[in-house]
Figure 1: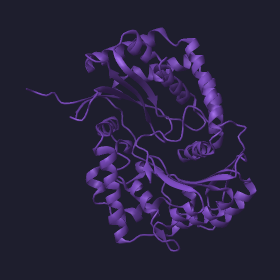
Figure 2: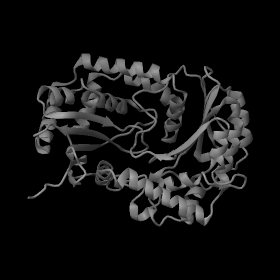
Figure 3: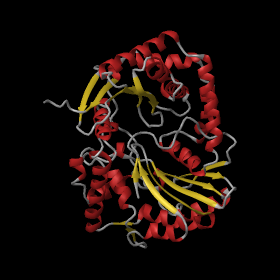
Figure 4: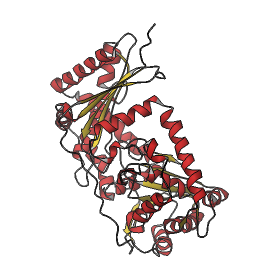
Amino acid sequence: MRFLILGFLFVFTAVGARADDKVTAFTLDNGMDVVVIEDNRAPVVVHMVWYRAGSADEDPGVSGIAHFLEHLMFKGTDSLDPGEFSAIVAKNGGRDNAFTSYDYTGYFQRVAADRLELMMQMESDRMVNLQLSPDDIVSERGVIIEERNQRVENNPSSLFREQMNASQYLNHRYGTPIIGWQHEMSVLDMDDALAYYDKFYAPNNAILVVAGDVAPDAVKALAETYYGAIQAKTNLPERLRPQEPRQLAERRLSFEDPRVSQPYLARSYLAPERDPGAQEKAAALTVLAELLGGGNTSVLNEKLQFDTSTAVYASAYYRGSTLDDTTFNLYIVPAEDVSLEEAEAAMDEVIADFLETGVDAEHLERIKMQIRASEIYVRDDVRALANRYGGALSIGLTVEDVQAWPDILSAVTEEDVMAAAEEIFTDNRNSVTGYVLAPEVTQ
């Protein structure tokens, strides 16, 4: 089963890898970046290839083509029949899948360590030798349309998120759904798929991440044999996207759907992303989101859920792991007999009070302790570590940025958090507020 990422979040959580992770990084002669993460506790390996191309790199008019191609990559090559790739992985006791996001597309297998060479052989093959038939296009196009029906058309919250994103981004492709607009998906064809494949799928636009019971020298030898034999793409386009203009007007949405059982409101603010060598502002925003809406002890939940019984749920989330400007988000589910307007006013009052009174020092320290604990736990999951490095390099960060991230988070001060809050909340012209509710029933 293939999957896509409906928002920005996939590989990063609040923590990064530590500098003492056994990480080796190098670049093949053809420009392919390679990251090796040693973890010898079990004889397994995760093999991943990340392409620096996602739905935000699509041309206008063919939305969903990145995700469509991800599906088509499991069809066939010169040496593999359609479906044979996954069948071989399963026959060797492994699991495989793929994912598409705004900024990257990835393919991975988890297998016994002694099957790594076979994975490299097959993955490098489909990097350049994809073979498609008209029947493949028709059948898989039906699959992605049905996927949209199940995940989006049948889900009012997903439909609402599409409208929110489209309102938040006036010019950038982050405003277009990863899975694609319905009317454009239905006419995607072989030429569209092969044009995207030929444009972006190349070793010098890819990152190989191998994590598990491996030795760097052995991985390098295999990578040079299979991926190093592929020629770099000399006409690889520079990664330039349409950027956001100044946003000069606050936007508001009212989304009605009879399937909505619980009204709620959401607000998003345009916010800066994590940048290589300059992650401090993103770290402050990450901590701010945890302070405001990271759990039952967060500011929004304490004030709205427990102190005033205005809401039954409140949260804040910052999507920092993107190539371009991202969003800071607030969500409120009002209590029974509390209108969305009343809930919004109460939320705004809490934010205003927070800007006035500042950060509770003990709360900030608890957040940092949770971050440090999460840092330890994540190291037990070799795929999570592989995801972290692959995702980072896909959006322009470096291995050093990933390893510095925990310390940068730990160094966030009260002043840093308040500066980030002031930047986000004092200009509503960068925001979109949406109400989600069922239509009123007239007697």
